[in-house]
Length: 227
Image (cartoon, rainbow, N blue to C red; front, side, top):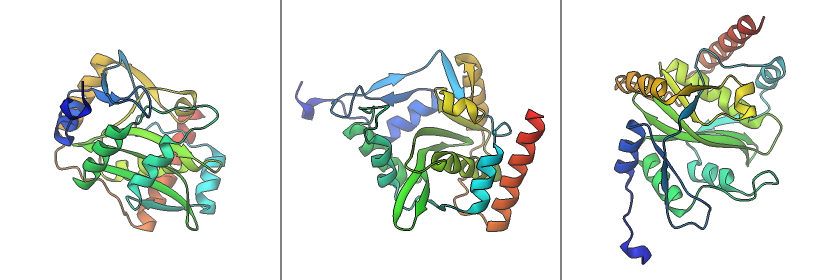
């Protein structure tokens, strides 16, 4: 089929898919098609269960990175799609870049970024819908950069009263930070509850004192859970 004759997925279609509990992926960067994924077991990171190690807390307190939100969304996607030794290819193709850029323009996608000077060294991006945030991808070019970005995302979601952080799948890296797997049915119940929170808005720029207090609360909560 000629590319011009393909069914073109729109940003609105993508939002409806997320509300139904499915998300898109591509086979590779060069793939011309997307497929829908509805895992039997879904990864989530409970917002009251983020595991913050002492070393991560130390990194956060040292302010090694300047944290920005939504300043270079497309650059974060590009970094997430770059080849690495552990992942020579990516699931992000041209349609993925187009769709999530459109969602960003609609205010439905966000990035959390770690900067050192003029260099983007870590970050993540995802989709916001109701009280749910769907994490899509993350990257790190400095030690702990992706962990710092995730800690800042969780703090902002907690301050904004989100109820669900969807990680799609669970990796060893995410498990070390508190991610768990839940059955599809449980996930859909959590998603339905989160989508009822229609007034939730992503808190992109909280005050410094408020954010520091929330990060400290996350650390204390993590210590209590692991002690």
